[in-house]
Length: 99
Image 1 (spheres, rainbow, N blue to C red):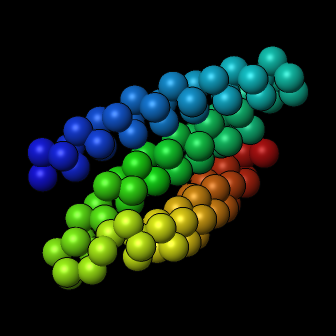
Image 2: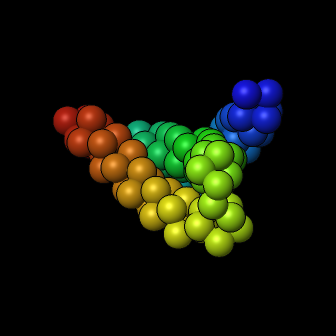
């Protein structure tokens, strides 16, 4: 659990920093704060979830007595892709009335 909390903190810090950078870039490039916030929030959330998945899935696979180096790569990649798309589309649907 200690490892997961450290990874969650790292993912949160990295996600927030990247999200703020994206918000700034979109705002200065397109002068659209709301779209910048949408994309920045999606990036921050995706990075946070990817960090958690990248640390949790190998631990789970190791407990199942399977080599994490072989089995965790496809699961992490697939999960990150699906979750990132769902986060972005979910946020876009939520922000849709304001765009």
